[in-house]
Length: 549
Image (cartoon, rainbow, N blue to C red; front, side, top):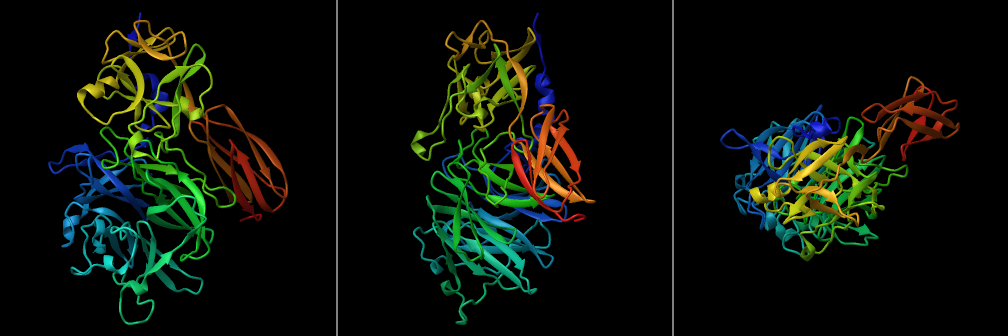
């Protein structure tokens, strides 16, 4: 006899940290004081003390173009639980431009105050100021723009967008303040200590385009598009940015903030649901994170976006490992759907740069090997239609794509409609049966996910029985020196044990057990000082060991 399970009961061990899944920012408090679904993009982050503040442009349109009347602010102390902090700034707070063009910006703290640099389409760049990271922010220049569009001669009229700001103190104790922006070209200017005026860099007594430098990126196989973000690591400057169209994310490195920069590679390929992307990079509690946007939410797309968070991984040479867009985010846990001893996977498709090829879709099958291992990783989530035992099954590496009953045929699809009919098509009733689970289509009662004689996923009156096998999407590793010892911490698959190898002046090999959540911690005392390369769970990290430091 079959027993219907409550939603998520079958996968509780896997989804106890589901709040860490992507997209992370999906709700806000509306004008009536009620929690409501939200779309937002172009994320920027600020670390102030132990709190991370996230700012994003509010997408409010019908999905056909940008309609962004204001910015939203969220705060978090762990990058998992986010508190909505309200509207810190509105496009209408500046007299020029459209009241619906709250395009990308960034907030920075300087001298105890907070400065919000923002753009409004092609109208130039402005700056607002507040005594609080959550605002309200007010125009800091009394109706005068910081950057006039006539000062730059780009290939497009909207080249003065997406400002990012960087402040540092050099080895001589001198502070430097930089503003960077641009679509099609990367521009750089310096800011005065008041943070609201440009520096007369060429000394001609006039603030204009002569004080702006154009930054070059060498060896670019694809074109720079927009959304620059400056970051520094180990004395090296990193420029993260959106490239191509549709947009992927890339990075470049340089010895000087003015460059020239050398192209480093892709950070993230073009997404499966949004035509744009926008990076923000954050160091927080010993790790580096990337915040970006997708169109993965229901009804989502390039003009109705959602903010995501993931870890950014560097190799031993400072290179950035390419990330695959992932629905599990910081949680990292997923399942494989196993039937007849084989894993269910979707046919692989590479996200296209051509607008005409969307929406994309895939079929599913059992048996054989998927092109990529992540094609067989899934999340079991609460059903798009709430109800007893209702679940929806999302692909991990095609965020926002769910197994969907398309007129009696299961397909992997993104729900761009958000109607009751489309939600029902992406909802299944999960029930316990014969040591596993069956999944009945809510849209086609009496039809279950099943496997035909050719290994294809179909809908049939005779259900297939699936077991849920825990899997981890990414392994991560870090190492630190304390009290004359090296401590390695890692997260990976919950596979009982992992070998830790350290190469350097002395070679060390150890074995550590992972806990039920896939975490491990291992400490050893090296026999000689020097640089060690620690290898575990397919990841490497370098650590300098000097004895006690």
